[in-house]
Length: 249
Length: 311
Image (cartoon, rainbow over all chains, first blue to last red; front, side, top):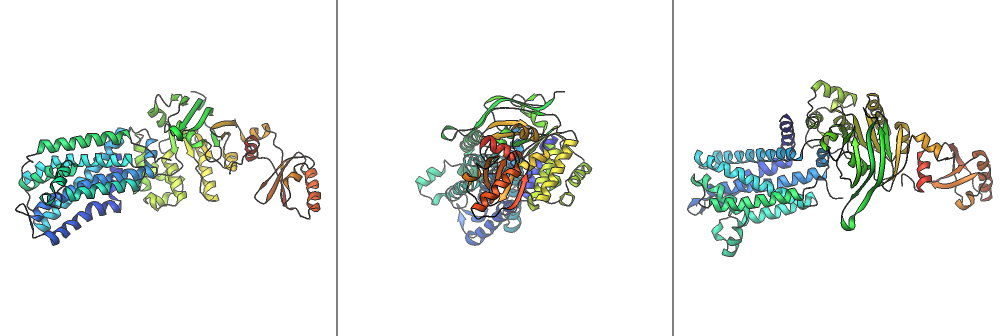
């Protein structure tokens, strides 16, 4: 147990001391919220103020960027600079190592979401209920797991960190625009809506937005939880199956 | 207690698959005695690092066996890893952590929790006291190497495996690392180093194994290897002469150029030198920087393989 705690603490410190992590995970989301406020602040989405609607979308955006870009790139970087190989040389069981890594990912991601929501409440008077927060928490928790699994899948399949980063960004931006995170879903053509409904971000944003906005669980909870469960299991399997301790020579 | 720290029997290993399949090690047999400094000597790509990786449990070997202090690496990888202190070729330290945090982290992975006093003493021994709270990224290459040595020994391992521990270090830093390696032996540890530097192997190692193309072609003390190969003294001269005319000179056994210097292996240096004078005069050349040096491991390697270690 003490070993797990030390390992988790060290990985967490390493994460938090990386200026890129701080920028992408803490500064950028707040900056995005400010931009959205100035550009779309007065508009409405389905009868709701845009800012009220977009805050959960930015939360999901963060979860996606954290898993598919941050977590994936961090793992690829550790592989590329030999840290994974060095850890492999120690007696620590791989499962304990990855457990610590997932816990660190979870802590950092939840921390950034807390900062984001606090900022939205304090600066934009974003309306939130305690029930909504409590109901969204398990959804956010599951969403982070899915996103980290997808990120690790990308990392395991990419020969280099730069490729992992490119794939992560491609998937992130595509889902950002077509899954109803920051752009209203109903304005998309129906064929694109049909396609987007199969993507993890669509399911995640529905699961997270419903409790945060209305204080109740999504009506499509079974369908959307099933979709992200499939993504998590498949991505987790691929990530494990193709995991490498070191870069290919 | 068994006499050997490391025993390797008929071990073969490869890397890559299909068209990229490379036979990295072939039928390797090796015993490293308890408490000795053992060198794996060979040029880049000879298989030294793969051999070390097989011992460290980082690379799966195809056939044969590897035991560390009596523990079979394949059957009980975790127990085997606990006996080892490891420094890989690249320092590969977790970024963002300070020297003290790194030592604490890696020690914890072995379920060892050293006191701050013990860490401070280790850093002092490695001349890293002023780096204690600095992050690895802010350290020079030599300091990172020493820090990874600190990480390798904080767990008090029986056996320390160092992969090219002095690569890319300046001469002073190199000699300092040598003194640390000797102190590890004085503490009763077994040390295995890989190197392609013959002077490092000669001055540090009690015994060396020479690896070429994945095979161990010789294993003994440096002096025994030199004696056994009957390598003669080398006459070293700076002059430009056709090799085919140098080789038949009196008592000359072989000749080669290393940079600007002509090196002639000879049974009678003075006789060969005299003949060389005459040959140079015939070509209107002058002999400069004349030296006679005793044979070394490089000569042994050259004689065995026909290739230079540093090539």
